[in-house]
Length: 168
Image (cartoon, rainbow, N blue to C red):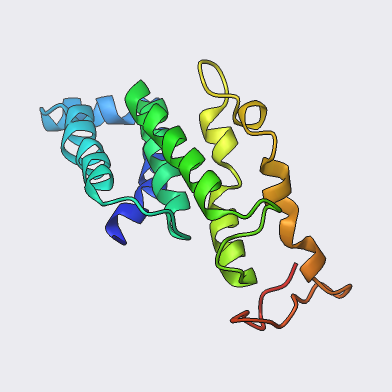
């Protein structure tokens, strides 16, 4: 499970280098198609593995589904983008209460999941992308749901299994 939760960092790194020309220069220097090796032997395998892990909406899913969607954007694979969006909608629809609060009713887990999904609309947006905020106008309610659980000094309400270090 934890392996499948890590693709976003890999997707970000590849997105940063793929258009730099360095991958092509390395291919020439090594005499192999480095781009094909990275994409076919690494990224597609990570995506395949990610999709093989049975999906149950949970607080580790943000990186997994963002990574899958970003792989789709970087590689021009609309199926990965569509699956990332489908999993995102499933997470939102099945793991958040109507008021926007995370189903585990803990500020720590809420912060953990929202921290990883906050930028999801940016990953899917842009030219040829999905207007996530337009499709899901209730997202701001999710992003701001726990604000009332913070004290004026920024400390979170000490309830359930909240860590003392979590502050606003």
